[in-house]
Image (cartoon, rainbow over all chains, first blue to last red; front, side, top):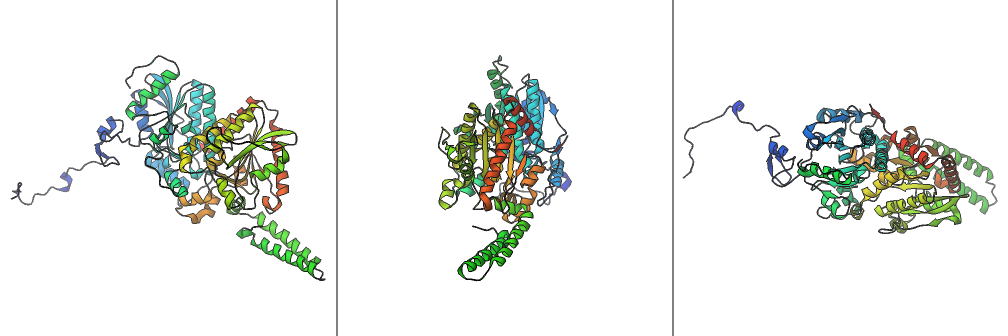
Length: 288
Length: 317
C-alpha cells in the first residue's frame, strides 16, 4: 500500500508558474558538493563543504583584498593590438573582440591601488576568463606599469597570477614580456620594495617562468596547479604516469618553491602580516 | 652531407658534378668544361633556393644535422684558450648547458650555451639540447662569476625548449628560468646573445636577455615551436608550415619587430655548408658588439638594457 496517495487527479502547473532555479544560484565543486552561491560568496568563494577554492577573477580578489572594495584602477584602457595579423582557425582580432564581449574585460590583467587593512597596496590580478589569462603585450605593459607605480610611490606590490602562459597570437612579443616584467621586478627588488607573488589555479608556462616565481615571497591557495610545462606535456614527453598531486601548490611547497599556502579567508591578513613584519612596522589589527 | 627536401636539386647537381669529375680522373675524356658548367648551375640553383626560403624551410635549416653547435663555435673561435667549467654547485652538471672561459683575440669572455648531440648517443647525453633547472642555474653561476671579474658574457642559443620533465618540474624549471631572466636584466657586464639554431621560448630566453641580441640568418626564435603551435591552435601537427608563417619567427621578422638587434649573414647554402666562414663571421660579430658596449658604465649598461626590454610590446593606450 502506498504511503502517499494522490487524491486529486490531473494536477498541472502552467510553465510560467513553475519555480525555476535561477542560473548561478548553486555551485557544484569538482568533488560533487553543491553549494549555495550566496554562501559561497560569503565564504570567499571557497566551498564550505570540501574547502575547494573556486577560480575567481580580479573583481573578486579586489573585493577580498581592498578595504570596502575601494580602489583606483591603473591603466584601465590599455588594450591589445594585432601586430602580427595572427590567424589560426580564428582571427586574433575576433578572439579579442569575443573575449571582451564575453567577459567585459579589456585584457587578461587588471591593476589597482588602494588600501588593504589601512595601508596602500598595488595589486595586479590576472583574469583567466580572458583568453586563458594569457600574457601578451598588454599584460606585460600593465604589470610593468604597476611595478613602476609601486616603485615611484614606494608601495608594496602583489601580483596574482592565473594564466596558461604566454599568448601565442603575439608570438615573440609575448615571450619578451617575461624579460620586460622581470626587469621591472629587478628594479623593485633593488629599491627594497616588497613584492608578493600569489600563484593561483592555474599558473603555468611563461607566467611561472617570470613574475610568478620571483616574489620576495611566493604564496598560493590550496590545490592550485602551478608548473612550467603543463601536466599533459610532461606526460607526453616523458611517457611516465604523473604522481598524485603533481604540480599542485602542496607539491611546490614540498619542493621548496612556495613560502606558504593559505586559505583564501586568511589571504588579506597574511599578506598584510608579512608586510608589517618584513617592513618592521607595528602589527595592524588581526581582523581582515 | 645530409640534404633537406627542398635542397634535393642541389644534391642532384652535386652528385652530377662529382660523377663528372670522377670520369675525368678515371678516363682520358676531357670533362673540365662539363664540370665548370655543372658548377655554375650548382651555384645558381643554390642562390635561387636560398634566396626564397620560406619560414618553415629556415626552421628546417636551423635543425640541420650538419649545422654547427655551440661547442663547435667555441672551439673554433677560442681554440686552445677555452676552459670548460662545470656544475651548478647544487645538484649536478647539466650536459645540455655548457659554459666556460675563452678568448677572442685578447679579450676574455664567459661563453654559455645549449649543446646538442651529433649522433644518437650524444644526443641522449646532451638531452637534445633541452636543459634542466640545474642547467639554467649553472649558467647563472657562470654569469655571476663573470660579473665578479668584469668579464663580458656571450650566450649561444640553440634549444628546442627547456626540458618538460617530471624531475625538471620538481626542481623548479619555471623558477630557474625566471631567476635567470631577472638576474640577466641587471647583470653589470655586457651580455651578447647569439641565436645559432633554435630559439624556443623560455628555454631560450633563460640565457637570452642581453645588450646585443644577434640572430643567424637561418634560425628561428619564438614563444613556441611551429609544431607545438600547430598542435595547440589547429589541434593537429599538419599545420606547422602555416604556424611557422604566422609566428613571424625568422631573423628578418624578429628584426622588423625590433626584438633583436641585428642579423648575422650565413654563407650561401647555410652555416653548415661553410663552417669556417660562419665561425669567423660570428667571432667578428661578437667582437664588434663588445666594442660598442665596453665603454659603458655598469649603470649605463643596465639602464639601457632594461629600457630596451621595457619598450618591447605593441598595444593601444
